[in-house]
Image (cartoon, rainbow, N blue to C red):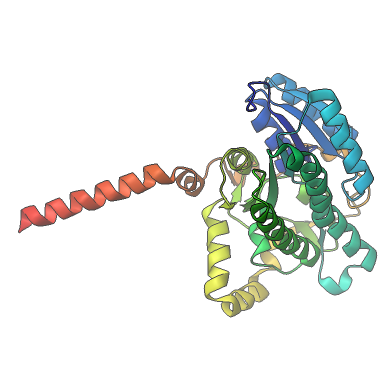
Length: 333
């Protein structure tokens, strides 16, 4: 619920599949009214039906987030239908799996426009409405790859690095102005989404996320939590924490390790890709879904995320354990 007791109004970009669709589910379970933004109307219609089944209400908004005018029109439509936007989630992304020298300028530009500029345009439309009201929150769906880039995804990694820098800049401006509008970022691990089925790839074998893999519901709950707590950033999954902090401690070792393993770990060996359609420029309706093809390998929970979002309980447990240990030492003496 929003501050006035009415259903929370939320916009989710990239809502036709994967993490975006799971985020829409998470808000729908709490009764939210949701603007579903993506290019593929087929996927959005399916997401709308699921939102209704979970107890929410949704508006289908076919939109190319790389076009600011379309994003602004979607924002206007949401407020016209549901009222003031409380939460805006930027999740839309596109990528090209290929060595950098095999990516064309047009492909690199397109992936950057969707993944980075899509978040910029979404944030613009959100803040244009939130700042005058002095309330609201923007959640950027980031990645551990916003800190530790990997081979074969130069466009995506570059866009996520840019998103993080842009978000930090905007956050400081809001703080300078004394605004009650908040902007946060959720850094994701590898997730079982359809992106590996519909992304553009020039690899010999089918692309895959680097294990360990999580189900989309895990980051979706993290995004919901981030939308209701003023945390600067949230890392999801121990693998994301390891990548982010490991890179800070030993970046040259990370370079060496990824140069040796990064190609093989991002492909399903012996599963060639044969001229399939991809969603870089047009949606692929038949692949629109919440989960990808890795259900049997994906984890449905993250103990690290639970600890991250329950810090007072964890601190109390640690303090209690320390006190008990100290007591045992005193007794032994």
